[in-house]
Image (cartoon, rainbow over the protein chains, first blue to last red):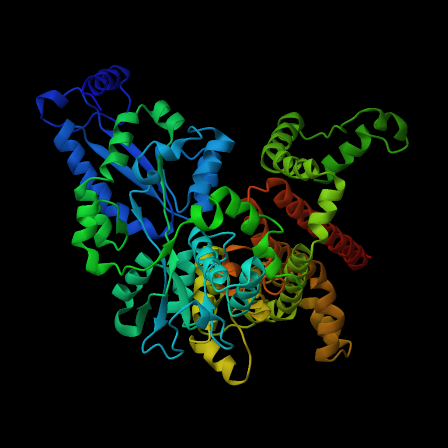
Length: 343
Length: 296
């Protein structure tokens, strides 16, 4: 980005008098005209801790760069519900959701950002990735090593409802990809999925709820979990749990996007674009790795390589032909997931 | 007061019934009808009627057969059965127990009575999600009561019984608080008269107290039922949410919304509204009947 549009923006900001009451302006001479601004990041469930730290770092970075004081508000919830909130008018400057399909809906239904949003930032607009792993109880009493072990009779599998949880959709697709690999094509995979969901005693509505069911209510023997959420559970509950990496999983790409119509209304485009670019910076990538999301930056990724076990990860484009197709085939009304629960 | 009533009769002779009907709104001698009726209509319109009209209009973009197909699909039908069935069971359970609690709190005095009286309101005050999480913690197999129930082979949380527990919890105050004021105002003289006329305890309760309380009890039960049908927050944590078994209709609405199926969600909402409205109207009719009989 060149310097002039930023300067223009500053003048515009100063002229419009947008933002909050101009208390405590920074002393930097260039920034004297800058009023504090506010950004809203609408995100999904397991990123609370991550963005808390990233926001603090960005506020610091932005103040150092421009002198402007930023306030960044976070909103968290199920990815689909958050997407619907933005469609219905929640004034998000940026969205950082669990899957591309949810941002596609914002582009399609509310036209708040262009349909090609995912090509505007590097790496499919996903500054970090994650995957689905198994969390088992200490000692792994059921000897769960791979996806095939989940359909043993008697094993309790905890995973949220893929209709209401983004993480559960990734877990579902990871399991389905395994089902496809073990032969029998779609029919074989669907037979596997039916057996798998027979072993699910509780369908929570979100990833956090499922973690609570597994860790605190002590229901089930294995939790299909976001990798970062699994580490978080271990951090929280200590040695009662173990992480098991299956033979393969899925490359979960939680994308980020600028909500154009909202930032133009708030006159926060520069700050919001800066925020999204900052996510790719080494400083933010370090924070990403620290919170057990897989960084995109090759150097940071190499630095934390030991923390992230390498395993074959299928991508949604390869295995399922992209989100649109996966959504329609598996999660729409009457789709494959619904057929599992036919009476 | 008698003067005013007399004046009213003079102003509006009963014999002259026909002209009275020619005006759309009957004028009362009390001033302020225009203003209060206006506020009533606007308020009801904005708060109740317009949103419900939108709800009633939305499903039809699916077409009639689309609505029918949505409502008769096995999962929706099962969810409606669970929601209404368990709500009814919970409301009916709260009827005798709520009556007993109201009776104890009004008729007896004992240390801690006021405190217990305050406890009754807690389900009102507690955010429903908090109630749901608390109940799940206690009734899950790892929780104290859940472990106890598991010992006798009962599955509480993550079963229809769990939904029943949550709905009983949120419904109880409606029943108790509906009965209490009536019970307080109930003339003790009547009961004493019954006793002097030779009625035993059971007869006094069955023939004197219960009939007097019946309208209030019924209204409390209807309120508890209506509230339970729409309850989401407290149920979602304890239900287990298994399709066809413990999936409640409000959750299915959320799931439909999650798929951007606004019309399908509205169809379930409208069906719930219609069933609830029918049930409440039926209970109201019984209540009016009871009240008339009570007066006669």
